[in-house]
Length: 130
Image 1 (tube, rainbow, N blue to C red):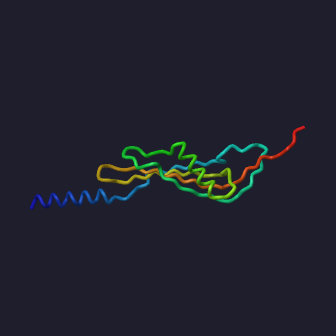
Image 2 (image 1 turned 180 degrees about the vertical axis):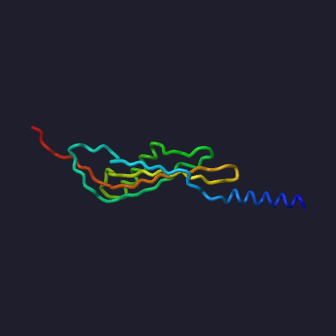
């Protein structure tokens, strides 16, 4: 009887650990005026809003994964692809969310990046210098 009670408690404990809900442990915002350098003599035309999300490379056991420079460029490129003719993103907000999911052997961390801003087209101005 005692052995079956211990086994039942172990099963319930494992079920509670495995069925735990993911928790957001951190959300960070970064504001940006533009995604690329804007030339002083350029003409900027607003093309519309963009919004894109991207998850980190994989789930990590010990530390949250952070965006690499390749993933950063990919995030901007995905946002630019949403609007034809766009080559720059203005007044954008980068949101980084770190989530923790409990598991049987510890926890797993997942990082998600979100970019929201305004797609625009930059054209270099043509002026003859004298």
